[in-house]
Amino acid sequence: MFTDLRYGLRMLAKSPGFATVTVLTLALGIGANTSIFTVVNAVLLRPLPYKDPNRLVMVWGTHPQFPKFSVPYPDFLDWKEQNHVFEQMGCYRSVATDYHLTGQGEPQRLQATFITSGLFSLLGVRALIGRTFLPEEDQPGRQHTVILSHSLWQRSFGGDPSLIGRTIILNNESFTVVGVVPSSFK
Picture 1 (cartoon, helix red, strand yellow):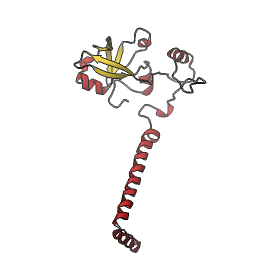
Picture 2 (cartoon, helix red, strand yellow):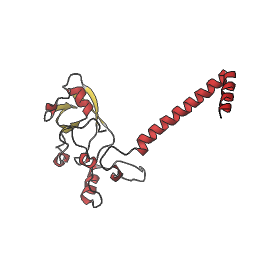
Picture 3 (tube, helix red, strand yellow):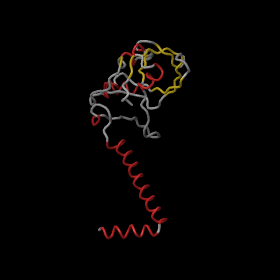
Picture 4 (cartoon, one colour):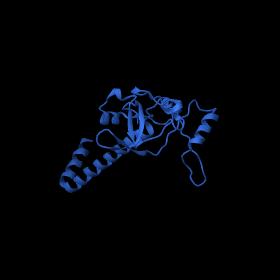
């Protein structure tokens, strides 16, 4: 084996252009495989960072023209009321909505997602400070509460724990801050 290795190195030394192309090809191949494995590991192999990830199910609506479409909120409420299969049900809007935070220095454009009160408990996520949404806050006209991401809380409010219970202005409407999620929650 050592003789073959020495012979191979001698041949590569005789043609440095070929050796360079060979080494670069190997480096690109190894780098590409490492990148692909990293993505596959993160997306497919590693369990979701929630409580009982193997018991989570996502339910979609169906329509002949739209094979996978969002379920209207009234339909979700009907499903939840008639549910005899799932322990808990929660709902979120998969498309983030732009909001503008004003009154905290420079205005900021934020992305927000609407979720129902049961989603945090379903995922096993507790608020870092404050609380998560209450069931009565799912009712129309009662949705003026907000839970902040950890990064927004740190960046815009300096990590001030007294922010809980205070109001912030989003799209020229007042929202009461009821909690902050941990930095690990995505």
